[in-house]
Length: 394
Image (cartoon, rainbow, N blue to C red):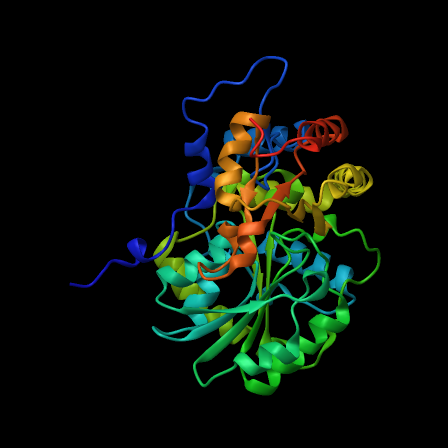
C-alpha cells in the first residue's frame, strides 16, 4: 500500500521542539532562553499597525479576492526596490507575491519539477525546503558544505544528473548564518545555466546582511530570466510573520506556470499583509536600518563572547543574519543534548541533526543558535549557562 507523502517526511523541527517544552517549568531567576526559531517575536512597529488598522476599516479591497500574483502596487514597489538594491532592471511583471516565502519555494518547485525529479540542496539545509521536496515527490540531493560552511559549485556539478531540475542556495544562510560571496553565487549561476536547470536563491534574510553595496550581480546577467528564481520574505524585515507575505522574482514564463499553483492553493495572497508590505517599502527603510544594526550588534556579541565556549572545545562554524551554527565537544548526539539542555540550562536550541540527512553524522555534533530575538544580555546569559555545562555532570 502506498505511503502518503506526509508520512514520508519528518515533523517540523519547530513543532517538535515545542513538544519538548510541554510540562517543563522554569524558575523566575532562570527563565527559558528560546534560541530555536528565526522569527521576530514582536509585532510590527506602531506606525505600520496603524496602516493595517486603517486598511481594515476603510479599504474594501483588503477583504476581497485580489490578483493571483499579488497587488500591482506591491509588485511594482518591490521591483523598484530590488532594482536599486542590485543595480539591475526588474519590472513588476517579473514579480509574484506569495503567502510567505515557504509558499514561494513550493510554488517554484511545482513549476520546475515532476515526480521523481531531483533538486540539489546544500547541507546543513533549511528543513522546510527538504520537507517541501518530500511532499512534492522530488528527491533532495545533499551537497555537503565545505570550509566556512560554503557549498562548492564543482562538487555540485558532480551531483548533476538528467533528473536534476534545480539547485537551491540560501544567503545569508539558514541555518549556518554565512553570507555567500558573489563569486560563489556567480559560479553556481554558470553551472545552472550551462546545465539548463534553475538556480533558486532564497534571500529571506538579505536585509540583515552585514555587507554594504550590491551583494551579487546575478540580476545583471543577460540570461538571468532563464535560470534564476529569487525568493524573498517580508516577515523578517517588517515583522509581518502572521500576515504571510513573500515574493518570487523570476522570468515571465516561469511566473505564468507559478500562477497556476498559486491560484489553486490560496487564490491570492493576504491583502492586508500586502498593503502593509507596500507601505513598509515606502516608509520603513530608516526603521529597518535600525533593526538591521540591532541584529548586527547581536551577531557581534555572539562572536565576541564565544571564547568562553571555545575554551571548552566548542567551535563556531558560521555566524550571520539571525543565526550562529556551532559544533559541540560531547559524545552525546545533539538531539539528546538539546532536550537535556532544556532541563539543565533552561536553553532551547535546535540540534544539527534537524538540518542534515539521517545518514550524516555531522549533525549529531552541531547546533543552530537563533539569536535574533535575544538581546546582548540574553546572549551573555546563554554563555554563562553553557560555560561550565557538561551533559555527564548532573
